[in-house]
Image 1 (cartoon, chains in turn purple, red):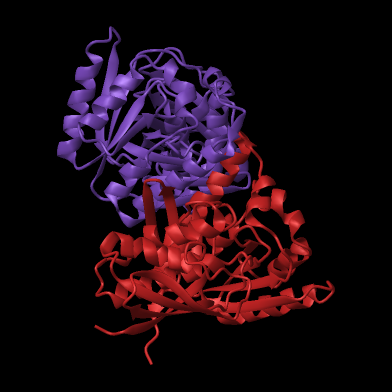
Image 2 (cartoon, helix red, strand yellow; image 1 turned 180 degrees about the vertical axis):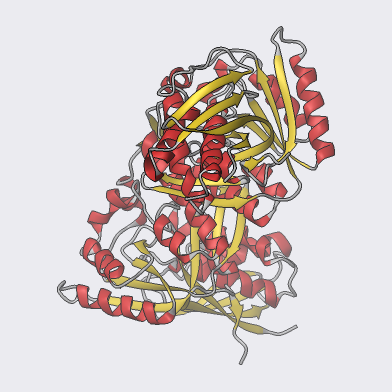
Length: 311
Length: 311
């Protein structure tokens, strides 16, 4: 049995337009890296966090150690694990920063202790234990795509029912992360409590179309379906320049665009890398008028999810 | 060019559990038959209605002639058509009675006048014109499955966007039509105006799962997803014995069950004909305690939609 392992957990986009709390996907980059090392002292600990000085070292408060500990508690609490986190996704970015660390830690520990959980699907609940520390909610909509790759439906969080959709082969994602702070808990307060039934019908029609488009690899249908008339109108005001970013993406040929998670990141889906590059350029150009720093990412939809890094 | 044609338009189930106003499918039987005959007098007329004495003969009020006329208006208003309707689906049954006549008339006229509309998809709006006379709403959720077969998503009625999902090969439907009257317009009044967001999330998770299950031919997922927590609770009280019928279906192994359209018909989906027969038997047995006449239907999901009857 190896004494250590390095694992990559990708970023992910949840709340994909009409799929609030239900539909998410993983992207190829950025992603956190976890180095997990066996230790003689029982329990999961955080040895070091590199790339971020605001996250807790306390193992009861860090998503990675909480996720790792929940797996150890299930398999063998006498095992000891030291975790080093190479943090590449900024906390609070809206692209599954905590989920990335949680899935990487869970996957790493499972590999390191001899793969007691044979099916990666079954690691989702352990990673969710970690994610819950950060978001306050027991949600699989970032964790499941980050762990499994591709598009994921969370049909239900309790009991957990996660469905893999894969991805159309030519689908690319562009993400702009404006350097502004939005707390998920604050953003939740903006959500409507009640929704008009006619809006539910519109939203469900679009979600059904989006799921069908993803499974039928119908890019045009994906684009026609990417509308969110319930959540986006309530939240878009929290993201400076959201309307301009979305318009730039659509004008440049994106299939659709929306808020990633609860923001502030904004994502677009595109058919083909050339289109995605053009969309990225136009979104960056549109954001040039705003006096806000941002990070920009472009990648194919991540098909592999969380993976061991082999030297 | 032939002088006459006979066409079969099948019954259909709309509002498939969590897919209110969005998801429908066609069944193999029952279905209306339309005999369309060329006439020298311009316009579409009703020559005779066989099997029902409550439907209007006035061509401006009958769904079949209105649908036929809308197609003639589009193609060539100088053409004359006489329609004879063999009415096998009881009006107000909740299994797309008016849609059946509307699609059969539209398809018949298109065939009879030399197929000016090449793609059957493009006949949907004409059939909807007829359906609108009966239901008061411009909805494709019965018309599109009856015309095209299989499961259909109506992503949007305006602009019309209809998506064919096909059907898992082993999927069967059981329908019980209790002989009670429910008007669609009355049933609409029972619907909630506002829906709690948390219920929207539950419903959309299930609908996403149902669409994925249908496309991935995952019968178990179809069953897990067939829940309607928004519409069914509001309407089930209008159908005597609904709870008993649904329980009997599920106890007998149905994947799921719900209200067909706005009722009073109750449908169940089953994997395999043997299971469907058992479900049918148990639903009939459960309804034996109610002093209500009913019709019962069992069939595979209709894959062909509306078809010409060849002698």
